[in-house]
Amino acid sequence: MNIINYNGKFFPEGSAVFPLNRAVNYGDGLFEGLRIHNGEILFFEDHMSRLFRAMKALKMEVPDSLTSAFLHRQITELARANETGSNARIRIGVFRSGGGLYEPQTHASEYFIEIIPMEQGYEWNEATCKVSVFPDVQKNFSTVSFFKSMNALPYVMAAMFKSENNLGDCFLLNASGKIADAISSNVFWIENGRIFSPPVSDGGVDGVTRKNLIHILAENNFPFSERSITPYEMASADEVFLTNVGWGIKPVSQFGDRTYSTRVTRQIFQWLVNSLG
Image (tube, rainbow, N blue to C red; front, top):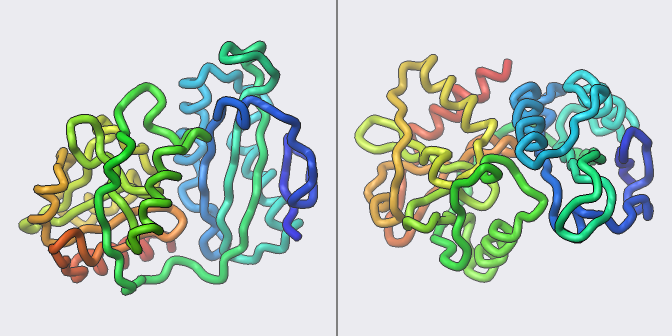
């Protein structure tokens, strides 16, 4: 049985340690998904930067003790207690303390950390990934759209739509009909020798892997631009892929009647892996 960290104390997974709280009642919180890859926590400072920005956006207090260094130690100790090995997924959840209805009684925060072991690091995946548009819930830009909220209903509904339609993933749209992101990932596409990704202002999450991949593309002199795109326009792309810290890069094989190549995407995946050392 896995062990979780709740406010700095370790408990067996499944323990009744969480009282009824604002995360459950209102989704009043956020989470960060991180990855241990071959013994290293990938892009750790970028994740911490987004976490603290998100807490500020939600007007949560950040105690002096809750620092990047502190959370790194907490993750390391939890990984050791769980004997997770060299590869794992990490989830840090932060939620507002106290009661109240919609209006909080306090802005103090609580946190938990859980770790799920994985068998291996990033590997290229040639599996078919057919993508469609999830039409029911829109994603739109706001002061809280850049991070992963505990109120993740748009992605939950999109994930069910994916399963019901035997898809590999789904594009989520904003109110203007532009692609914002996918279920748990950012979207990139290659067209006429250039690579593109929707701007965060189109409503998608400000992805950590996305940010680092953009740097890698620049280091390899691969032309990159941010650009809004409709599903209709995406059908003209040469290649499409999704990024997420959990698995790195996932190539999209089909969108509607359009079948994509993965030749350049595979090279970009190799650049990503090489950058991890």
